[in-house]
Amino acid sequence: MQWGLRNRLSQIINPATGRTVMLAVDHGYFLGPTSGLEEPGRTIQPLLQYADAVMPTRGVLRNCFEPTIGTPVVLRVSGGQSILKELSQEAITTSMEEALRLNASAVAVSIYVGGEYEHQTLVNLARTVDEAERWGMPVLAVTAVGKEMARDARYLSLATRIAAELGAHFVKTYYCEGFERVSGTATVPVVIAGGKKVPEKDALELTYKAVQSGAAGVDMGRNIFQSEDPVAMIQAVRAVVQEGASAQKAYKLFQSLKRKRGRK
Ligand code: R5P
Image 1 (spheres, helix red, strand yellow):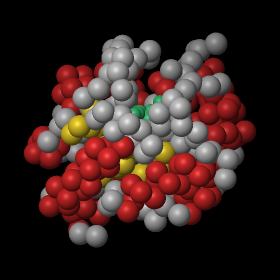
Image 2: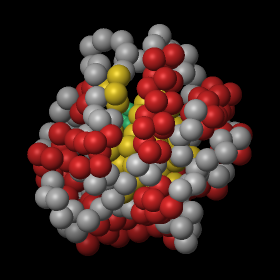
Image 3: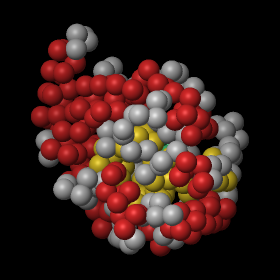
Image 4: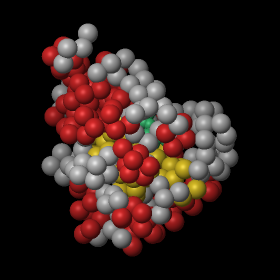
């Protein structure tokens, strides 16, 4: 791997721990004003200091953040659909030139394995890798899952490995029973999405089980920014991922930070 690419990747995945806490805030690219992200800058700003990287679209990055944020950016560059239509019909919507101009540390592209436009999304990924490697830019493949697809180890290891075979430098997928099969056959670091909002205790348990079974961390969105206390929640997630805390210990931390911050 070339020096610049490795340097960028090391800004996201801490070389000392091999892990990362990424904050996913790109949901609006097909969901519009997602609950919790109606005013993205306001929600996200206090969380940035606890994230190893943040994953927005260029719109939110340019409109809601100061260029001095200091947190590495994983820029979403695929999209072009909405929740109202076929989700897998994605194209590349942000150029590599723009990613470089915005000083991204990586770019993110979704793939829909098994989706109607599977081929198109896999070619989007492969072409982005070709272009990104010219500039030393790492590529995160996001294994998006259609409503009808099972989030099991068989399907997620298929999608994850295909992404790595096409050249993705790291992959985002979902946690599932038997996750060792997904992480163990990926050949590149794998991070997990949090999925739909669940109680904080369950989200921390999910995070713990994922890192115990080989995940390099999280790229978590709703379970942080829709939490009753997002600032406390991201610190609890961080304790599990970067400090090796158990889910129980992290939940206690969440409760005590929440109390200190005056939240009920
Ligand atoms: C999905 O396409 C986006 O990349 C989201 O940012 C991500 O998958 C969602 O994260 P979470 O499931 O933790 O809200």
